[in-house]
Image 1 (cartoon, rainbow, N blue to C red):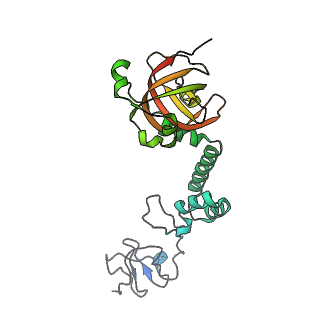
Image 2: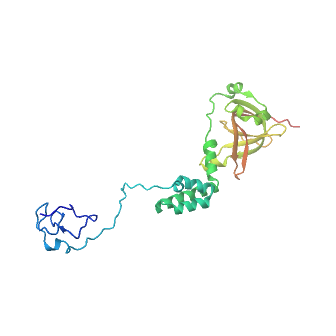
Image 3: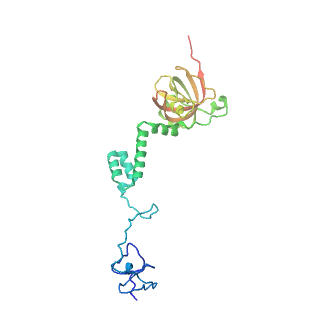
Length: 265
């Protein structure tokens, strides 16, 4: 019997100088006629020197392959994103030369393009402003103005202008003069009726304050009207009018407005 030199027929184990068993695929010495494993007879076309060369299959990997592909830190998507923010040309070069799949590169490039358009058109700033400022409508008090007014602290307009954060969410009352009515364009873009703001000033027109009308029954104020406001401090705000002009000033959320009569000759 011959000496066993191999077991099964694979691309990695091919010995044309040995006999190959037609039954179990084992390789054995060319001077043996029978397989030492299963005892099968080795025909002429399975003997050494007469077998055809095996066909080598192209190696392929399935998607479920467990191979780990290491990516250099400068080819990581997070670094490419940072590069595109500060050095767009460098970011594009890193994306093109990275070993990531083409589909991943295309998706990343599309996301970067959308972000660029989003920021360039200022839509991102608008949305951020709406989220952080435009959607914080406070609950209107259920008491009457006669009950609410005594709980408010009288504040001078100039004092409030200088330190608006000191009165944040505190009940205050001020007397101001209306200079302009503003319909908030951002709330209209969200499908709402539009918040009404008034740009007001003190009696000497030294400073400007924003007053948001949250009264139960809205009164259409006119430029020049003097009003007594009861509400809460809202810090500094930015409001955009219909022409999308920004108005930035300390603001008050007004729950009650009392129109003062103007002396006429």
